[in-house]
Length: 286
Image: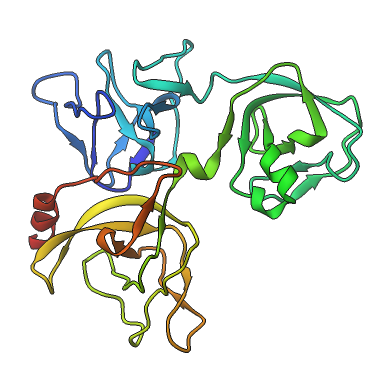
């Protein structure tokens, strides 16, 4: 089971919402913040690139994974379910890898990229259930990072693909591209809080720059100073290069920039608004 961290709609397909509940009296169109829901199996990747958990049945009922908090329990069926909209079930991939004579690479790493077991003996075999350019891959030389890592089944530990051979080919995932969208700061840009107020950095803004910046949410926020709802991207990072005599500004974990102030990059997830302008206004007026 998982807990909703925001009000979250239930989906039948990547574009169609559906009510949740088995009886007419229990049906509702969204989960509310703090509500706990049972999920079934691993996540599904829909055609829009977003990840969803199955939360009901027999009809199709899914909720976006990023709307849910940490797992507090799971209910996994013995058979594998597959949505007509899904391309990959997170539990469906498995292979056996064999460690090779790879000096300096035959190590096992935790999910932060720290080596927890070094110099694994050549010929050692592991069952793996995911092949991925991981979130920590940028800590490694480009060749090792781009080659990806295998996750050892039943753990959250990883072994570099360059250190092993696999008995069959698995789909290579890219963690960042499957979890984030990307923007570019094409102008010096103001930063906003979740309540639509502008952050105060003494006149300093995020400076125009060419790098691709991670974002994980597109949402309408009511801006009190403008008396209207604007579309914003939620920033994943917390420090950014700044204008003026300041090297960087710290924006915190809940910072937003206007979609109209930045350029969306065609890489990673294609984000769609998680609410409407009317919903943003209603939420602000409560």
